[in-house]
Image 1 (cartoon, one colour):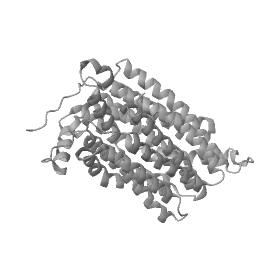
Image 2 (cartoon, helix red, strand yellow):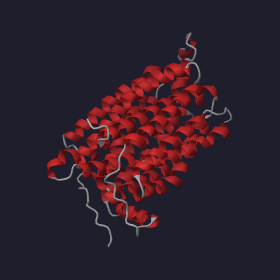
Image 3 (cartoon, rainbow, N blue to C red):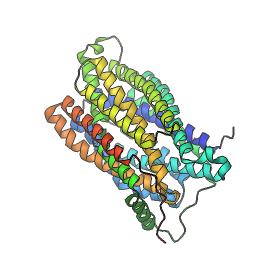
Image 4 (cartoon, helix red, strand yellow):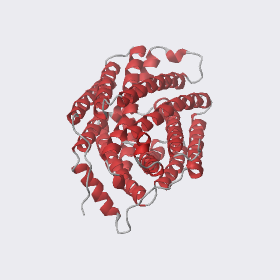
Amino acid sequence: MNPTDPARVYVRGSAAAEAIEWGLWLALTVWWIVDLALSPFQLVLMGVVVNVAVILSETPTGVVADLYSRRRSLIIAEFVMAAAFVWAFASRNYWVILPAQALFAFGWTFRSGADIAWVTDELRGRYPGPANTAKTDDDAIERLILRQHAVGILWSMVAVVAVMFVGSWSLRAAGLLCAVGKCLVGLYYLRRMTEEHFTPQSDSSTFRETLTEGTKVIGRTPRLKVALATMMIAGLSSEIFDRLGFAHFIESSIDAGFDASVIDDPSLVSTGVLFLIMGVAGVTVNRIAQRSLDRKRGVVMVTMVLLIVAGIGGLIAATTGLLVLLGIGLTMQDSTRESLHSVFGSWINRDAPTEVRATVHSLTGQGLAVSEIAGGVALGLLAERAGLRVVLAVAAVLMLVAGGVALRARGMEPVIYAPDN
């Protein structure tokens, strides 16, 4: 197989990046909750900083990808995130390491949407015509995105084991290992990624014009408006599940006596095992989502079902302190929310025209970040007063509401948007 084949490069590069971030997230979770003993609001504030940085940089970096080069954006992303990984473990002082989250977010926005936009354009440019529709139509791109996510989850399990092994000696060393991995992904893109079919906006197109056009696409496309509303409602609960769900799990594992073992760092091991279980569940959920799309059940229905299952899982996690049930609930919500990233990407990709596709991805990502900030601050303060279980229950209900909103797009057909002349 051609090593520069767009589908191959996309799956390998994005899957590797995803796996490394899983490994880093395991190390950071234990570092923050156990080693630094951060409060619920401090944990959520980490996510708020990420999302503020996303708001400030998501749209500019997306427009840059549409105007200049998506390949270049992806390469920059990996090296910037590698620097953020090193910074995140540079000190035990909370206020010193907090800005590392902003740097990570800045790097991530260079990648957000650019990888999907790149592979879509390269595949359609390399394999034109009706004879290649099976490789390049919207359904084929959706299947490719889900395949990348499945590979990413499998590789993530390897990364988690590596971080468990290295982290048992030093969590900082595990963070450095992840940073090295990010640099290697950047070098892989530099060597293997080609950009032969990227059509930048014309010289007369400015940053502001491209941004304006992307905004009009969302405003005039009903399915995109429903997708954005669904993402934003679900996003209100994201920081709670991402930051405080694991805090609830680690506290429950300590209460259950898990930490009385002879393992050097049992919190790392218990959380690592949960990550591995989530990985297996994530692969399963991803395959189910892919088969559902293959059977033409539609991205809207798949989105709705995933949100409902995530909400039910969140409710289970919120109402129990029993470690096994808590693990089941967290696994249900995490595996479905992981697949939602790919499914939302497919939804946006299907409805956004190629000229501003990366910009539309970035604009929807910016909307998601706004909701995550609002939900993170409000629910983080609630957690300080009412406790982890109450705030997890509220977050779960929001996921169920988002599922109901997604249902409004059922029956809507994708609209071919005609830009203003």
